[in-house]
Amino acid sequence: MADAATLVSQADRATAAGDLKTAEDLLLQASEAAPEDFALFMKIAALQRGTGRPQLALASVHRALTLRPLDFTALLLRASLLQRMNEATAGEAWSHALAQKPVGEIPQHLHPVVAEAEARVEKWTAEREAKMTAAMQHAEAIADPEKRQRIQRFRTNVLRRTRPYHSEPTHFHFPGLAEREFFPRRLFPWIEALERETDAIAAEMQAVMAAERAELIPYVQYAEHLPLDQWRELNNNRDWTAIHLLKNGDTVAANAELCPRTMAVLTQCDQPCIRGGSPNAMFSLLAPGTHIPPHVGVNNTRLVCHLPLVVPEGCWFRVGAETRFWKRGEALVFDDTIEHEAMNPSDRLRVVFIFDIWHPDLTAVERDAVTALLESEGEAPSTGL
Image 1 (tube, rainbow, N blue to C red):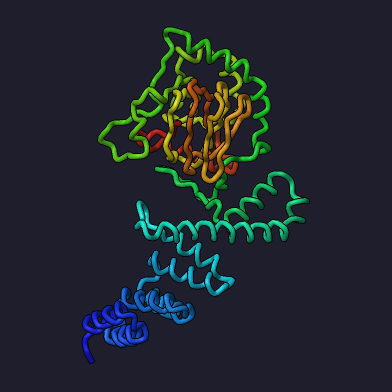
Image 2: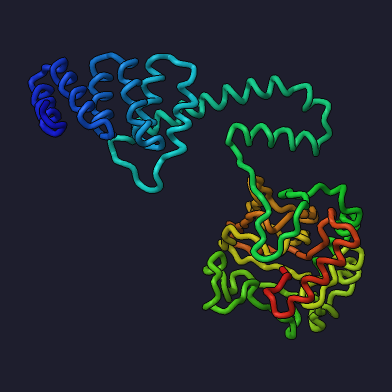
């Protein structure tokens, strides 16, 4: 028998002459001589598809996929064959193909196929979503708003419209704590009292901003040589600045004394008291057109509370898979060790009052243990905001 390369060359000549039967026979012979040749099986599948035999073509694609199970082009071909055969599994096959779409530009000849794949997957997903929603209708109807939101998120995760996110602190991870992007208000009995003070806190913020002695510093500051990349664009950048009232457990007197009402409110908010780390509280100022890139915080034993004070139209905040728009006077509590980012797309300044609180899952003895460990670290990276 001739070698595989010779047989393929002969098959190409037969194809050019229009003798597709001979071309296929030669390619099949070549595949026996070279059973590990992925491109050869794809060539056979393409010929079989072109001659109107999708079932044979599918078998050849499956041979190719045994060699390269995640090959994007082979998965696209498989999905298109299943679609042609009206197989119920075609939608899932298109989804599997798109999951392997390479990053960056794809070859021009694949653009129409990818566009079809995206349309097919969207249709398949919408049909599944409708079916799931109908099946879950009773459970959602009797669930309270918090549980209903979790049920809906379960569905969108299954449909891959969203994905799971987890707590990934850069330094300090306490096991077993609930991982929530935004925490329910019911866990924080002080939150409504905080919101009632919005006008007073905003007035003190204006006063401290106007004071000549106010300390306004970049929110992110670290030595350039440190192995940190998530803050590169905003390190020492005055597009994102802060006026600290409490910083790593110390009171910033020049600012705090201009904000007595704000400081009084904080005494009710269950903040950690950790030497060199907490409590923290500040006014966070985000300049027009500034994006805070995706990042995670240092320590999952505390959460972060936002009280929006000055919120131009369109300012948004994403934690994990959930994006919210800040609303003046509506506090948000979130886990900053879950990936999050923010954007001020407006032409005006955005100001949010930010402070840290204990994670509500921690017991008194666990808080003591966390405090002891963090204080023992001494010069460890700051646990503050």
